[in-house]
Image (cartoon, rainbow, N blue to C red; front, side, top):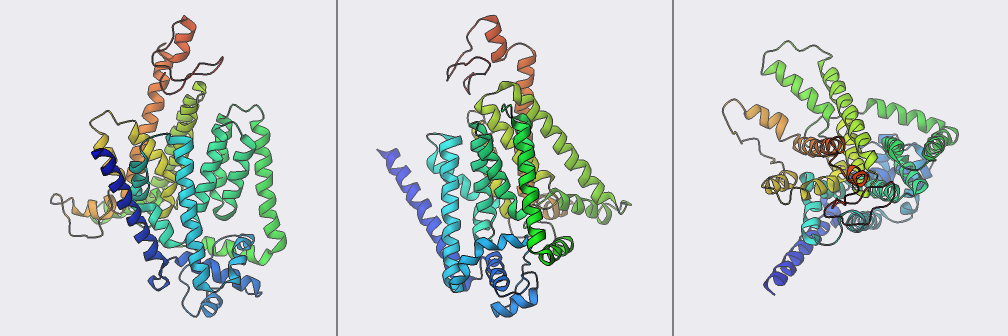
Length: 432
């Protein structure tokens, strides 16, 4: 009875906290959802025959400065056109409700398809606070990242369930805005679908057709998009904790604080080496998981792909870490019987402090302030990625020394703790 009361109180407190967050963003005077401000007036400008890539024109329409450029292809404005029939305050709140509904749908998808029964309150709290509050950062910014993540994880669920065409459609749909999600088609070579190469070729052709359609319908818009994308500049840190910017800040610290003669190309070379290492090791890990051919191995491959995607991209914003929430949760849950569980849990959900007055040891303050705290979500992602690589390596060693499930079936001895019936040519589930 006491446990039920505590769980109810925790659930009520979490619900009130979420409602307070949404109410804060819903106040249009807060100045939040700045990305949606750009989307809304870019769609209005396009409908009026004005270039959505002209910042001055957007600012005149909005009667306030537009701080964020519209850096998507011209056809991506179509879903925002219906919202322009509403005044901005109404469209603002409608878009906020859509984002909140997408987050709830994402939680339900994760819970039903990947997490399973139990861990309800802990799971929701983890999703809310993980990676420096990435989910709240996305809702506050008004970016489309939450909708993109929902499409991608719906596609991953379809891929694990063997519905390859649905996976391909979800990935192509998710890639229509930021383009880079099309890289998740690289998961198809690890699929058991015999027609996977046909589906990959068809998906690439479909996406190429979408790009060509943009060029045919709005050639000037595509030119403006390419120009703005090439001129896009930003600084790294807690708002854009990517490997590219971490490499740059590390090189600058080595030159300024370490007194080293750092070559001008060291930044790009260090990033390229790190990205190639992440891609190569992730590919090897996914290849090691493929022979197991069970649901857990497929989920691990998807999680490794998501982590590699985040770690290898040169630009990865703070709200984009919503993509990594489930991989981090599944990794932490595997440590539930180990002393490191609490440390792993705290590492994923602790926020980066905004203050710059915290020094742990003399001489280490600059390292913490310029590399650790500003890139804390990225460093946590690297840690989770290493856990998955270690798990894949352990599975490969068990298969090699004859202690795996396949070896037991060859010897005719049943594996211990089998949680689902073995099928011919497939491995048992988690309990094997």
